[in-house]
Length: 194
Image (cartoon, rainbow, N blue to C red; front, side, top):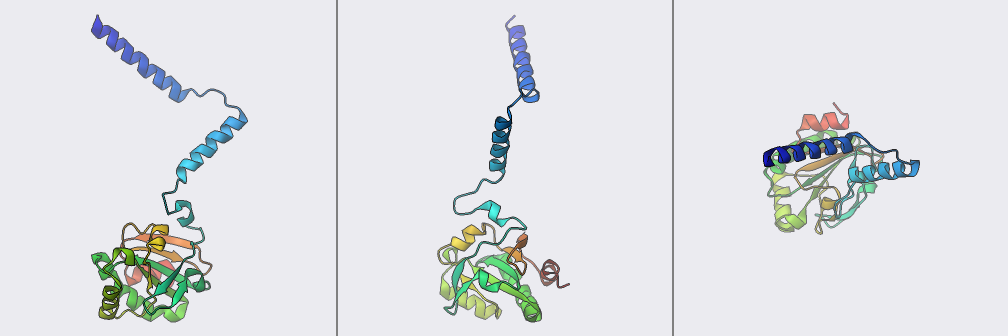
């Protein structure tokens, strides 16, 4: 008898769950709007320090100001009017090491075609400025390397896996986010230089 009662209770509970999930009571218009807004909020929840909705394709890239290896101040907004490959990397990262020669070759071949590379070093997670300078010299890098010493730009741009790159159009709008290394052909395709 206990088995029959338990089986009946389980079936009744399953039926109630099914009915509740299928049947929705008539909501007033204001309740429907509240429900819709709640669902939208869930989709665009942010994490501390990074506004996820600001990094979607078609959104304007958040501006930042950092100091480069040679001590100059650089702002992302200074590059309006050019396409930008915004790359986040570190010296200890094997995929970053593999990507850098491709970036340098792409830069040499396309720097006069309205494309810039900003390779932001995640200095707060790296081995220090001296190590970054050695890396740049060893790889012969000539594009701009801002130093993210406080980790603000890396967090804003969700550079949790590196390399992470964003392709920006001439208006500073994000056209693509790439997690992982790129080669020259990929950079050409993403910037429309084929």
